Image (tube, rainbow, N blue to C red; front, side, top):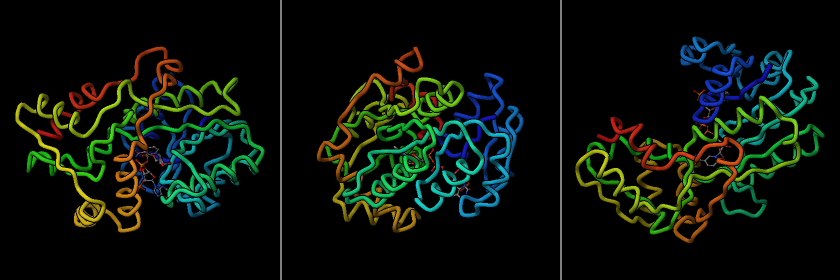
Length: 280
Ligand SMILES: NC(=O)c1ccc[n+]([C@@H]2O[C@H](COP(=O)([O-])OP(=O)(O)OC[C@H]3O[C@@H](n4cnc5c(N)ncnc54)[C@H](OP(=O)(O)O)[C@@H]3O)[C@@H](O)[C@H]2O)c1
């Protein structure tokens, strides 16, 4: 049985992929009422909070592999690692990012702390390092639909943007057959480097009207995120990440998605077409 913690963008896709393969899969959530589709697909739903080790322990019963994917709060993910070690789990697949102990971005320093805890646990594990998710654009979709424009501090920076569905598919594949993946790190990207100007052009074609992109300063981007309701600590980390993109931080590609899945990574045009209604 595979445990997926939690049912966000990547976890949901991984659960659906595993259930479609008739793998036994359980998903940890604090909001079971939101997961009817996953239950209908055949997943077991375990109710728990990442802040509560006892709920994690209940979810670990009978688990051979854990897919660890959540907002990367160190105390929460280290609770999962400790629970996996107590339960004698055989393998952990950890969705991480550009982890770095001296990053200006707290989330990346947190990822380093989590990965260190995973190493210290002695559990066999695989680390996934995706580039930025295409699905991040969905948070801007209502504004794009209403104003036909969007802004970011990412400047003209190019991004090897990846579809979170591909990250979920890779995570599911490794979780279903972890042999040979222990100790490995995979870098997950889409097939091309695109800037937000390219994003605007693709979206314009998809929705049939002009969508424009505005370059924002860090301060403008931070203020816009806070106005949109993003909690300030997260808005700070996101605006910092966008500013680094302007300096080339996300300008990297890898063949790991096609190598692992045996098919091309989804393009941004594919993603935009699949989500046309959200931007229209
Ligand atoms: N976004 C990107 O561009 C990007 C790029 C590279 C790597 N990553 C990494 O990807 C990971 C995040 O994956 P994701 O984007 O798939 O996540 P996500 O969509 O943000 O989903 C996070 C899930 O965690 C659940 N959750 C939050 N707090 C919880 C708690 N205390 N107990 C139980 N569940 C809780 C949320 O559910 P509820 O709130 O409904 O309970 C939500 O379903 C992070 O490690 C991040 O660094 C992201």
